[in-house]
Image (tube, rainbow, N blue to C red; front, side, top):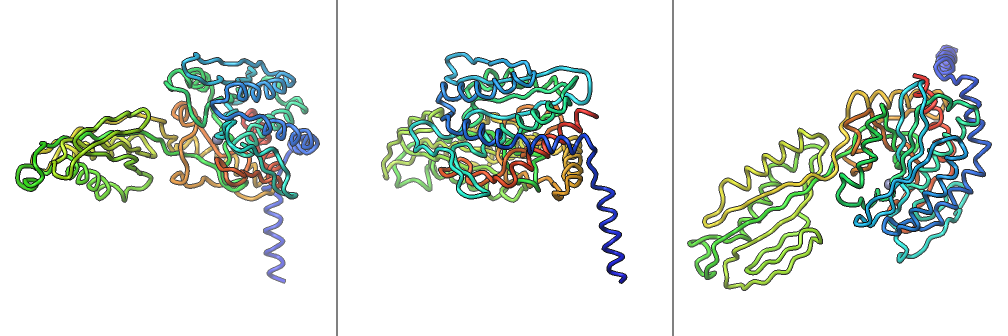
Length: 427
Ligand SMILES: [Zn+2]
């Protein structure tokens, strides 16, 4: 009897905390009603090849989405990029008003699948799974954005809100330089207060309040060229020294949480020609020559700017001190994608989303481990706004043939996104 009472009290408290307003219940109804249309459009998007370098396909994907945003009263623009970048450009859809938070929604039009790769047309595999190129990464996520906004529009709840939906055309392989390919994107995000990205993640239970950033480093090592017979007397040469340095990096820095660095290419010998853009080397040497040059290029991933800077300082010190006899080394670094740091503002967004999810009775939402994620478009703007990623469609095998979407979670993720945006625009 006592147990029953406890159970009753628990149920009662859940009922009290789990509440959706009449308006919110209507939003969920709208999402449900438009699901057949949403799935048809997802199929349509997936069946347009939009590999990043397929400029025409990316453009076509953008046009399909653009028409839908026009229908729900957004102003739409195509942001072109200079021809030299060899990228299609981006789609932006926005509306301006004076209520609630200014929200910036992030999707991307491109996929990793170029037209010369085997096609994988949209196919429903069973009642909970469909496959197709970019079906979750991230045409599914794009549809979460569109369908959520559509549902709000049906209830006339977009009125006076300020929302920008930005779909980049080159997320998987950004055009270079970044200052050009992401210039407009960053500019518009800075005018917002909250950025929400719809990459796939942990489905209904996990989102990303932080993402690691990526950067690069290049190590040049020089030695005295001489006959190999004197290697331990006249000087050890560049290859031994480069090995020492790289090993020292690992020994001193590899246990730091969220920090990783990987030597992706390592070359040494007598004659060395290196193309750092293509990451390709031509090298020749002789076993009886002490190598005069070695070269290593790697990446460095980090969670905060401080962590990045400190790691670089340590690597510089390792490269500059205790050099083996007759050798010297130079290391240089280059910035890549900034990290999305785990800020209080980001954590606050997780809490608001968690509340939405509990009110919907679909369970808790928590921030996932940033160590398990790479960098994404949101990373370019996270330093200017409160940011959250991983709000998109769920599935498995993104970036691989046979990628799937979870069709059971898809409608719920759209409902959750719609309610989340709704509550933020009422704050
Ligand atoms: Zn993606």
